[in-house]
Amino acid sequence: MRLATTALAALLLTTSVVACGASPARDDPPPVSLRMRYDDGAGHVRVATLRCDGGAATRTGYLRGGARGLCAFARRKVRLLSREPADRVCIQRYFGPQTARVRGRIGELALDRRFHRHDGCGNADWRAAGALLPPPR
Image (tube, rainbow, N blue to C red; front, side):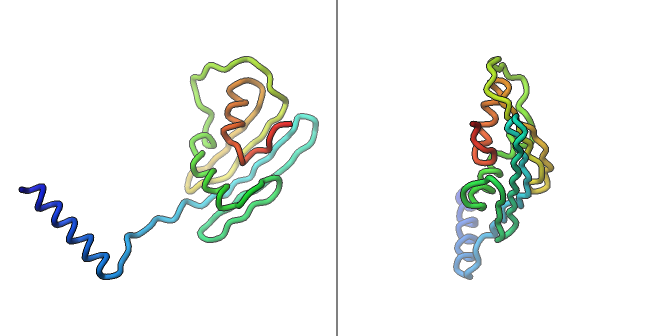
């Protein structure tokens, strides 16, 4: 009986909010401000920036695609961008000399992550960072 009363009270509250024309509050996604630096290992450096805050979204440099989509991608990858996964077994295969660094903020979280392709784990992280790093050549 108590569960039915609680459910009915929640239904009435929801109905009254909708009837008054109010909508549930939506949290804006956290702002993104990133700077990526890529080095191909032969002395060629490329830089890109990505910024999204409220309705404004911009990208510069080598980044491809829409800035809003890239920011959504960065938000989904915040764990990868914030730290290198620990306790992994990596194949000792050299994939290339490329290195990259992603610095900035997603929301209140400061990021400073380095990427490389010097072994299997580094190459896997590079591929997981996807759209934020240039494809290796």
